[in-house]
Image (cartoon, rainbow, N blue to C red):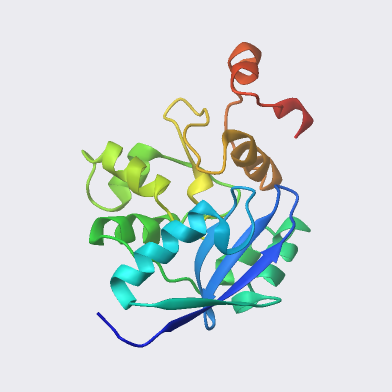
Length: 196
């Protein structure tokens, strides 16, 4: 374990999908929290911090106006430049399989979707659909590593750490194909897809 303190930049920003926390190591984005919490007290930030501490030792957070220029890229994305996020340097920390899945996610172009089976096939593990789904769900750099572009085999939305409403908003924003759930199912989940 490294005895040097890892210094991370932390940017808080508002967005059309709610408040976001961006975490960067210099020019490289290492974490995104889109759960509606801000700052170091966020559960996702604490989880990422524990993970990084296991790999790198102690770390500190420094407030930053635009960590790794990620906030600027997000503003461009939300303003309509759906390819803006692809230019962001990111670093993910996980198992070899997780990192393989996350690299595959970065190859999904904005405006398109893959199924979980397609994602497993993309890394040469067609039988590992559930494992691919679990790795997709553990993605620490949401939006920039676009796990929201993975949908069920029937074209419907399944599993998104930020909530299905956000996933639907993002896919609608990118004009990506997916099948909206029926109104009964959507209302049970608290979705308001018609308003998106």
